[in-house]
Image 1 (cartoon, rainbow, N blue to C red):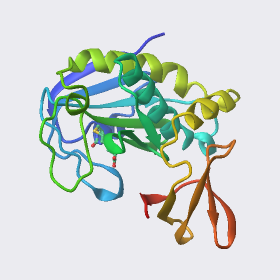
Image 2 (cartoon, protein in one colour):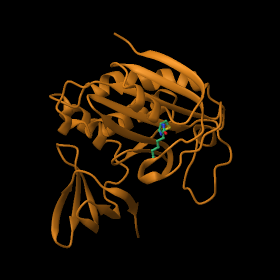
Image 3 (cartoon, rainbow, N blue to C red):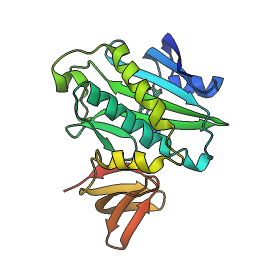
Image 4 (cartoon, rainbow, N blue to C red):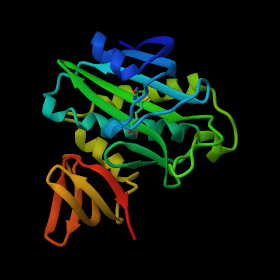
Length: 232
Ligand code: BTN
């Protein structure tokens, strides 16, 4: 079975709509415009019609909920691979951003309601000027040409099908591909984890998809973290 795609002119947030409607597995909602697009940590996600790609995918994973955080990694990798098909080399910044040349081009917001995992994706496609100080970029800025938003969507959905199917037994293959695109590897970072702020050097990604961080207190394995920032 494939995806079932619905396009709306305007909505508050595609993630919010899928959380309200809790649709079946494989349903995709694309919004030309979001009036209240959200990022992680309560940030806003801004996007203009034809310039940005904003959509949410509803999945009903058969894997236990403890494995659902892996969907963010699967999605970041799928987006990076889709961009590769357009000749653009992308990196994944653990746990859920996609970067081009160190700047953010795509954000992923995974939320769960009941049996539904909602995967929200925001991608800067044709933007030429992005707000200062955001450390953000777009496909157009990097490639020097415009892209058809629906073509990019199709490429992402193609990759998303196989990658989101790998959060269970096939996860090692996903992790192997992720390691090849890991932006943070070898970098010194500062971050907020559930157990407090930490600083260390990233050793890579563990077999469970966790961030391996060498700190003064020893090697930490982080399953989740907010605001991972590379420092000097
Ligand atoms: C982040 O980088 O903090 C995550 C950004 C996620 C943005 C997407 S756009 C489609 C979906 N709907 C939302 O309101 N947010 C996600």
